Length: 552
Image (cartoon, rainbow, N blue to C red; front, side, top):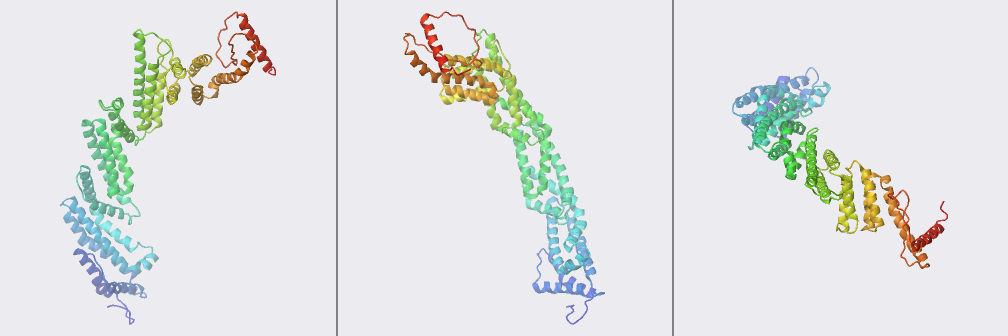
């Protein structure tokens, strides 16, 4: 053993040839070539390490640190040139999988060699490399592999990986662990994974180009023979598989890039073809209530920049056409000679049901997305403001409310009344002339209140509260005043009735005091009251003036 135990100097060639090369490098190469994982006994390792240490710590001119660093690199480079590269070249014409397996084997061997050489020359890394700002032994080993092996086989390896991926896309079973191992090699070519430059330039970009070409072919095939729902099922499946593919053996950074390529090729470029496809496009799916297919369409097109606007436009057009059909049906009835009146519950209910249906579609199928909410709003603003015949939709809607709220009208329980009011107020929100509705509603409310035809005070208050939420306090202030007048009048009625009992008028007489400005104005007819009614009126006037004499 060459050592300095008794003060002897280790010469470069002696230490290298008789110790390091013979006992470490030759054994390492031989074991790797025979296909075994190399393991040095502790005594062997310590002997080689000590030799390297001694050769690096001898005083100049016998400090061989620079020479050992250089020979470390030469050893790796020679092994790669003389053994590894010829083996790979021999496999290059035998098929992609064979080449990749050989590359995986040689890369694994290189990592073993790099690990042991780093252990033997640890002292170089700690002092010489650090002091001279040189690449570490591990970095140097990777660079040699990249320069000698990787640069020569990367093009073939990339082609082989892409071929395997395309085979998997076509439903074949591939060796995913093999692909994953080679992908890790590409990643390590960027300074041990510190940079993804090699992976990005040499594998990812060619893969993106190949992915685009693959799905361009699929797009043309699918669009020619598949319905829109069937096409979108295939798109959904392809996107899920590409995401899984990245998870299983590609670098995570590739996922958004591959996704964008796939989305562009099989969604963006045929979006309008799919939406407008005869017999299976968006309008047909809406007409046939295909909620699952519509939901899939919504989720897939939501991936694209501005991808939902064309779909929302079709939805708006479709709902408008359905609403117009309701309007045309009412027009046809009038044209057919049906007597015109301000009460058409069938027409109003058809609009309510239409709105309720597509409000549900937008909430559940389209996740309440603002573009589809706007589409619903736009379509109903068109439909609700199309008046047919003598009576406006505002009057028809107000009369519908009158049927719900007056006794003897619609036979509904409390929950059904509230539900009906909710729906009619939703329809009311689309009216352009809300003031016209308010005037008609106030007149009908006055009749219900004064004629005691209102089925429920609570229902009246509920409706006014809903209108208040829609339009504000000023819109409902007069209606609220009307209800308040009656409430105050009821409180004072018993007091006046007691006063009337003190007079023998022989009449059942009651008066309702109304606040000017709250109630609709009516033309006051000239009447001549009988004496006994005039007497009752005088009693009320006296009682009222006395009760409210402090008012100015």
